[in-house]
Image (cartoon, rainbow, N blue to C red; front, side):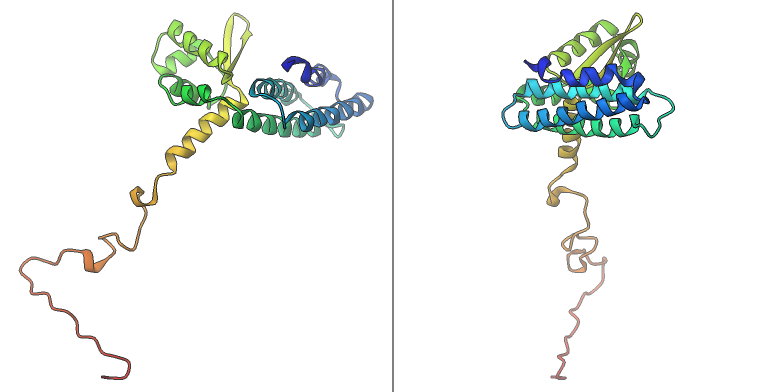
Length: 222
């Protein structure tokens, strides 16, 4: 079911190389419009699994267009823009419906560190292991767990396995960063009216000095 929903994105990716042809460009426009209708119809009732599959399919199609050279008026760039919107919508929706498992996993080490490292972009397993300071077999095991939970996707590049964040994986990391940065006001390093360094009444007086209150004069002179 999850795959059948998003066959249109696979077709869009397959037609990428011909997108400068006006006839193909018009066909792509029609397919994209249908894909957007599917998204609108699917969002209210779809599971996180279905939405995540859609986000991955749309991301794959988008990356296909981003690799094109000589973007022209017949719209690989326009197609890419619409695909980017689809990725954003599906990624956000799948994040909002994600089960607690993926969110808990992202807050658990070493998985949080793996996800954070992949925010820099797709990486080979050997490079990721080096960045984490761990061995490759152990890193590959962590990646497998993250793939099973929909936070990471991997593909073969020659003999190497390259991994990247799924849209939902990226949103999970970004949400984690936002939560960490959203410290309570009373504990954050913010200048406040009651901060002793800016509140003269709260600051200790100098040693061996007789401190007296300044007499107040009313506006009426009394």
